Length: 394
Image (cartoon, rainbow, N blue to C red; front, side, top):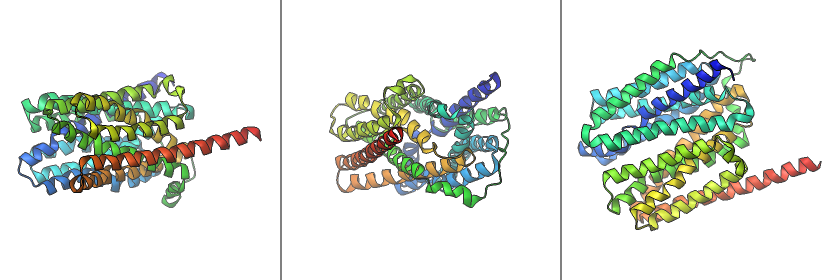
């Protein structure tokens, strides 16, 4: 990699950090703000759900368009613009209508995440794809972490509108920086049609890792981003402590994403890391509702941080291993659309179980999905090992 390429990869990482800061700085207090504004809980649920649903609808089409045009710079510019504009709507229309429009725009912005990843990974060789994936996910997590830290310490002092102004500013900076990216040119290849691009959805490897990511992201959204905070609050935690709990999780995610880009990952095979991580996530889901100590719950937040840092990095890179370069945006769009289903459905199912049974029952359901993912990934790993052994013998 020459100096120009190194500068480009570094620039992408800075854009990623500002982009995800803009997308997440207001999130920890969004529900609280809307409920205090006397907006019904059902409408608040619809507003928050609009973010996930818009991603679910747009990620595969965006991936196809990115493959057809190969102009990832354009999609990055649009994504950062939408991220900043979303919070401008929150400032100008600080009611249910403004936040609904804003969350649709934020979801649209997140759908362009495909181009950030594909462009960054294009600078690395096939053997370095896992390291590249880990680095960009680490930048993603750093942006989210800085957002959580900012809102945790400043929300009570400055309020939601100033927090949204930070989001708008970060989105604007990311958009300006995006213009300094080199224009990506289409690769020299025969013209590929939409139907041919959609053939990637039949790839067994992509299907497997997309479904595993569905579980990981669904469990993360239901626990660290939702019900774990409720458990801490029920134990008597203040808003500041709840914020610290989220910060511990994000620091862990950044730390493990960094480790995933080093030789530390070589301690186990990639498939061993995957099924071991699901086993640990399942144990986390069983242990959290049993705890009667805020400190211990906060300590357990290190486990899903590893799930985001190492597990999600590996699931992403492994999902794309068998996909041709000219079809990778479509494949990544499909991968992200599938795990967005988990992000949307798991909190709904867990919430329903919580209301009808108990919090423990909801976490047992989540633990069950993790253990199912563990068994599937373990069996697949053993099958692949036997196949490799047979090839060596023959």
